Amino acid sequence: MRSICAMRSLLAAAAAPTFIRAGASLPRPLPFSLPFRPRRAGTMLGAARSVAAAAQSRGGGGAEMEVRGTQSGEIHVIVGPMFAGKTTALLRRVQAEAGNGRSVALIKSDKDSRYGLDSVVTHDGTKMACWALSELSSFHEKLGIEAYDKVDVIGIDEAQFFEDLHDFCCKAADRDGKIVVVAGLDGDYKRKKFGSVLDIVPLADSVTKLTARCELCGRRAFFTLRKTQETKTELIGGADVYMPVCRQHYMDGQVVMEATRIVLDLDRPTVRSHALK
Ligand SMILES: Nc1ncnc2c1ncn2[C@@H]1O[C@H](COP(=O)(O)OP(=O)(O)O)[C@@H](O)[C@H]1O
Ligand SMILES: Cc1cn([C@H]2C[C@H](O)[C@@H](COP(=O)(O)O)O2)c(=O)[nH]c1=O
Ligand SMILES: [Zn+2]
Image (tube, rainbow, N blue to C red; front, side, top):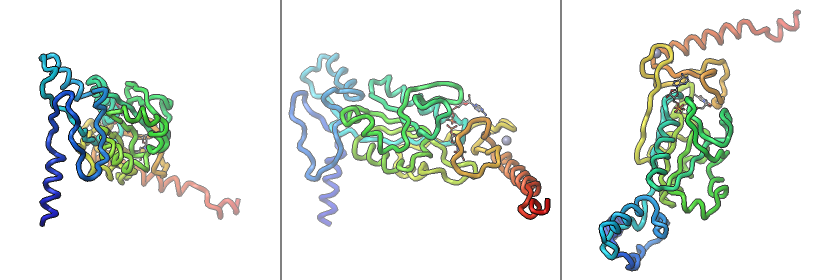
């Protein structure tokens, strides 16, 4: 019982907003070691900077001001079928954060080289420079520790291709206090969960499922239909290989694909018929 009370007061202390007088020493650390780091209190970027700037402009140089002593991370997940606007939403969010004075970094999987590796590109051509990585764990090293520490917001596109997505998001948001915005396919062309995207839903502050327009009837599209007979899960492609479809047209599409498969199989010469020729 006593330990529950102790835990409650520790948690209450951790949750309470920190008010410090400019120039005063920082509050004492909690009695256990939380790996949170202040979000660049020294350079006062982002939210902290605007609060401080507002206090200054009101003539409050020595006044009490709110400083988010330990900036908590966030995870926002954007999912949906192909062509739903996931990348567009990700770029908008990251650009808005940059507009608010936050330092941002964008990552995509190096498996998707459709538009080159130096930028994330939407289906209608909007671009933003990025890091193309094979695994998220290399981001820290690629960027360097100092630069990593300065990043406030990390955007991740094509998240379904990163095996270490869960681990990376935990560390970036929970330990390092980053805002992580993740965009990716929740399901593959078979409507099976794709990579680790759904595994980060329990970690997330927000989850947004976007829809596209069904290419066959114009209704809302929740799924991605593969138009080829290729069966491997990962197959990079755009409108040449995939189309967004509604539930009805997904079901119809599966029937058509299955029928095509049967016909192609019947057509394919067997080893025996080869031998007879
Ligand atoms: N069937 C389609 N083929 C090509 N482009 C499309 C198609 N449907 C929608 N688009 C365009 O793609 C844009 C969304 O692109 P993007 O943000 O890259 O989507 P996502 O990342 O979800 O695949 C839409 O705003 C639209 O202009
Ligand atoms: C459905 C599905 C898709 N992919 C690939 C195809 C594209 O290269 C990306 C998705 O890109 P988008 O930004 O969401 O348009 O994923 C795949 O490999 N396997 C699939 O089942
Ligand atoms: Zn449809």
